[in-house]
Length: 92
Figure 1 (cartoon, rainbow, N blue to C red):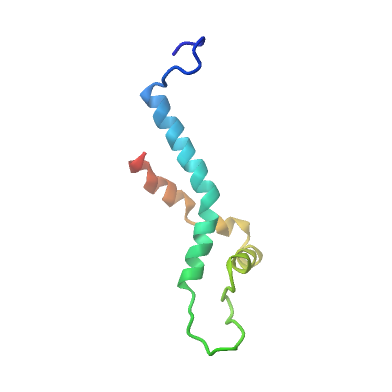
Figure 2: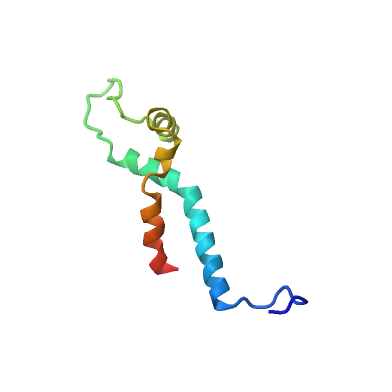
């Protein structure tokens, strides 16, 4: 790669590293939202109408996020992040 030509093609290993870094960064930003979405989708909807939510029932994305942070700490938003990153490696 020539220093005088910044648009020169990257070596395949450089492309692989850049793609892997981009994927990990993207996953790091979206993972908390996916985790909250997962918790919202598995909560029970079997309760009587016009009754208050059951403990650990979330009313929406913001409520779920704030409840998780209060009860489990901010690191809880990233539970399972490492296995997810490892699972993406074969697709890089």
